[in-house]
Length: 111
Length: 114
Image 1 (cartoon, rainbow over the protein chains, first blue to last red):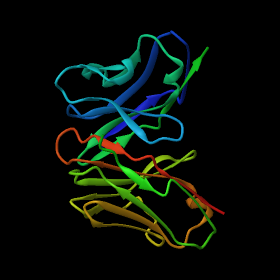
Image 2: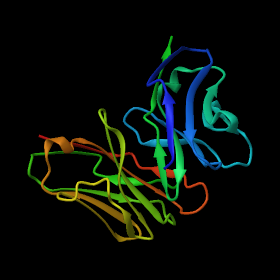
Image 3: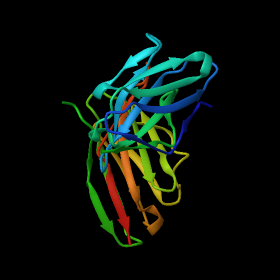
Image 4: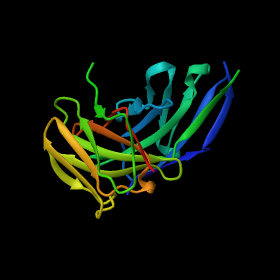
């Protein structure tokens, strides 16, 4: 069975600083990978997806993620954090029709 | 702008009452998922359908929960009887089988059982 591990349930960064949210997957074959974001009192929204077309994937709101097979990682980054980025972020991997979600990382932005 | 819609957005009910939550998937999507989100358990998959057929409901408490798709534009999740431990946010998501399999989430139904 597929799984993803998100390192850190809470991450705090200063406004304008680099955002780095870590995700490692377990899969014996190249998977489809996703990052979702959940703003307060809303559903999950797709940020970006990896489908093996390119290892560096660009998403919405300035986020990107890099697929590294050697490290089984799919970390999410943004060069400069904005207050509006405060939310919970979920890494996920596809398995048949389903998506297996990580536990989530809550991102706090410090003024 | 195609979206998944869910009704009601909020529901407060007393223990023992029946609760029905409704979801309208994005037109053309053939997979529908029901999730439950709580602080303690996070996001849990309750059930999912492909082409209106239930494929997996192993995440649901069978004695009180039921999920159906009367037609391609409506999915329902029922709890009977409801219990305080059912208090959570329930999300519906839809997608297309094959390919990457990304899912599109509705805004959720926040259920409070007193």
